[in-house]
Image (tube, rainbow, N blue to C red; front, side, top):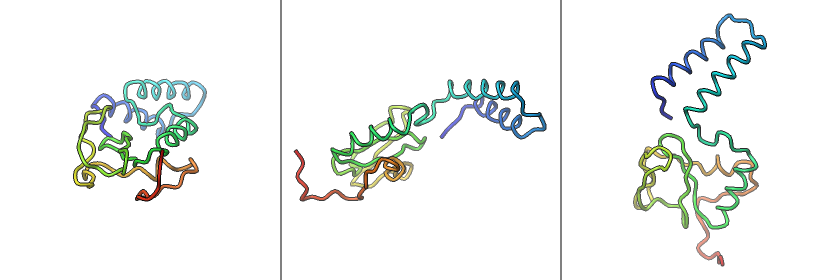
Length: 136
């Protein structure tokens, strides 16, 4: 995940405030909440604002058609359909990083995210689809 200089300064300030000697009272909590909300509004975080239920529904919808989940170099999730193997490259719609791969080999800058995305959905993932499984 990448951050701008401004975002790094904001994170540093929040970290220093939380680890400082200030007493944690209602005013301090409101101040920190406001700073965190401000940071979240300028730096979109993958899966931020999406519930576990929504994620589960998305994963279940895609799982009926096969495919495999991955992450771009900046942590944004994407799915490769059909067999789930990387056969071409594209750009991440969130950050324009190169995603995918070639010859069923994922780019080294991308990460497997199958286990992470299936967690808590009740779906059991398999690294390979059954070639004899018929789907209509």
